[in-house]
Structures are given as structure tokens and as C-alpha cells.
Length: 280
Length: 281
Image (cartoon, rainbow over the protein chains, first blue to last red):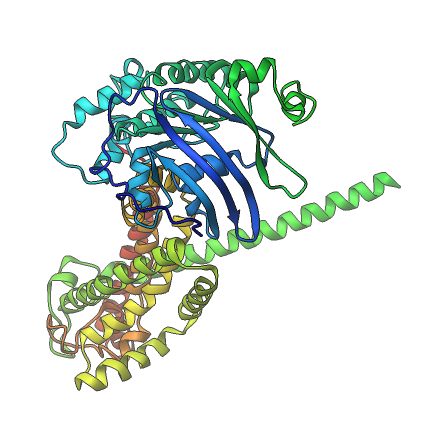
């Protein structure tokens, strides 16, 4: 599974590597020569990519190019799929998240994730959904009311749900549900937020609201967003990574750079073909 | 030509529809007939004293079945005590942990177990418990009945857990919630209505079982609330009374049948009604 075993760093457990509030200009996540397999099928080949702190990094590319696999490797959610394995490194503030000492459960508290379809817990109220992460990781003695309000405000949902905190999370509209999921992810105070096509199940208005939210949140934490929608990448991201899968359906990183630069002056012909709509 | 074919097709359709409708109403009709039959025969002997009084000496009319009601409750309760946790645990294992190979084997064995005739489970209980304990007992009956609940609860639990979208598991795991807690706090609550339904149906099923108890609990004409000794049960008492040559006992057997059927029906109805409500209050 593991290649070069680095000189071992401390396990990435929530207390030992607590988020430093003033990490401006630092690296959020560094991906180093990352390859991934699902059973015998290779899904990613040799990806090296920097995700800077407090910026939005968009990952674009056609279906099946490994965008989702890449983003899921960042918080080891790929391991949920049986038979998945990786080679290479993903560095979170210098610590290799694949190191044997790292507990994936602890890692995921630091690297939050929002999924393609809004997935609030159906048995829980709006309030319970927001604080679910805190309750379920058994952190007691915290002011949940205050935290729920703060998280909902960060997710730009507070004003819409302040009067229905006790009603079912699934009773909200699709866009509200997705912001609820964002609030839920933010409530555990992650250091990085991953968004896997967060707007693909939403209407244009709800999409705009999420995009506004992304622009606000980038002041606080690094965000990685996978998107099918190139306009969306252009609207919300600082940097864009373009991925493509070749003949053998193995995803590779074609190029990565400033979003403005990528969309006006791509350095690779394939990027240009993709963003001008010649394929994909 | 086409017109003629169309007419034939329509006729065939109507015949098919008619046969299926008849079969549907026929099935429901048999249930109604059965209900009516039991009600007509049992209603006259149904009285409060049936569940509050003990049997009179044989041949003396009167008395009731309190010993059987209590015995059934104790035996079914004890069966649930071990059958429900084990069944739910097995269901969770099948849905959440089992690999494809082992899962298929366990699932197949559960399906075979649910097809084993209940009299065989009674004999099984006899050899495992009765011969070991040196006598018939409520515990042996509870063991046999629990075996019946196992595959029912395990398979329904597995099926309703599978209906919980994988996205919810992922949402929880991505929050840094451990797998075991994700299962207990997210997956199981989401499927709880279905799990309760399956469990209650299993309880209703064993409440009406007679065969497994014949070899294990034996029956008792006297008050016994000690599960290490032979106990009375509704079904056993119905069976006994029905073959004894006393008209008043036949009457009580009918009334007991009515009572038992009402309880089972009520469980079913409550389960159906309860499974309509869903989500947080």
C-alpha cells in the first residue's frame, strides 16, 4: 500500500495537531505522486498537486477522470470502497495522512466533506444534524446551541432556519439541505473542506447561494471543489486543476494553475480543447 | 383481421384480470371466513374471568386460562430476550460487515433455518435443553421459540439496513464518526421502523406457535410462573382442551383462540400503523 515510509510524524489526532488560526499563506494539502487503485483497476496515476491554504482549488475534468477519487483520497474516504488502495503521499500540514499511525477517523474530523447529493440525517432535526458530528464523536461539555448557531451562520443558513431548528432536516429545500450539510461539516471545525460536486443536484438559484458561500468560506479555510461545471470553476476558484483519463481510464493531472490563467491561456492543448467544449 | 386479434387480446386480458381478482378476493375471503368462524365460536366463552381465573378441577365447568396467558407471556418474553438481540446483531453483521462470501453462506443458513419445520425445532430444544436440564421447562420453550425469531429478525433487519442510502454512512464517516457509532447512531435509527416491524412480526409469529412447545414446555394445568418448570401456554392449552371430552373446555379453547388471534392481529395492525410515521418528531 505504502511506498516510502517517511520519518514518522505524530499521528494526526485532533488534539495533537490542533488547527492554527493564523496559517495564512501556508500549504493546506500537498498531494505527492499519488496513485490509486480500485482492486485491479488503476484510477489515478502519479498526481502531484498543491492545495494552498485559504484558497479555492477547483478540480475539473470529464466524467470518470478520477476527480472524485482524488478528493476522496484527501480524507481517506476512498477506503470505504472495498479493495481501494493508494501509493504516494497526501500531506496535511506536513503530515502524511496515509502514515500507518494516522487514524482515518481522526483525519476526517480535520478534513470535512460535502457530497454530491444533500444527505442530512433523516432521523434528525435541523439542529441535531448540525451538531451530529460533535455529538457522535463524544465531545461533551460544549455549548451546542451556540455552536449550532455559529455553524449555521457560517453556512449562511441561520436566518432561514432559526425558527425551525426542531423540524426535520429533510424537510428543507434541496439547496437549504446542502447548506445544512455544509454547516454540519463546519461544526466540527475542519482545517480543510472538500466538496464533491456540491451543486450538481441543485437548481441555479441554490447553486448561486452555495457559490456565494464558498467565496465567503475561502477566507477561513482551504476548499477543494470537484465540479463538472467549468463556469462554476471559473466563478468560485482561485486555482484550477484539470484532470483527464486516457485510453486505460487512468486519471491523470494534465495541468494546474491560476484559474484566470487556465481559462484564458491554458498551457496544454487538451485543457484548451476541454474548456472550449471540444469534448467532455 | 387486426380488429379480431384486438378483441381476442382484450378477452384474454379480461379473463386474466377476472382470475386474479377471484384469487385475490378468495385469499382475503378465507381469512374473513376464519375470523368469523373463530369469533362466532369463541365470543360466548370470552369473558374477563377467562384471563383472570385458574382452571377448575377437571369436569367442573367454569374457571379460566390465567395460567396459560401468563405462561405464554413469560415464554414469549424470554424468547425475545435472546432472540431479538441476536437476530438484530446478525442482521447488522449481514448488512454492514459481512463480505460477499461469508455473507452469502450466513444468509443462506438463515433462510434454511427459517424453513425448518417448527416441530423439528421443538425436538431440537428437547435434546439440547430438556434432556440436559432433566425436565420440561419454560426456558426450553423460550429457546425453541427464540430460534424461530432469529432468521426472521436477522433477514428483515438486514433488508431494511440495506435500504439506508450509502450516502448517509459516508456523511457520518466523513464527519469523523467511527464506523460502529455510524451504524448504531445513524444507520440503525434510520432503519428502526423497519426493524421494529420485523421484530414485532416475529413476536406475533411465535406467540401462535404450538409445535415447538410440545417437546419443550409440555404444558401445565396449574399455575406456574417458574420458567425452569413445565409451564402452560395459550397454544398448548387450546390443543389440550380441544381433545378433552368436555364441552365447556371446547368453549374455552375457542375463546382462547379468539384471544390469541386478536393479540396477533393487534400486533400486526399496530406495526402497520406505526410504520407509517417516520422521521423526527
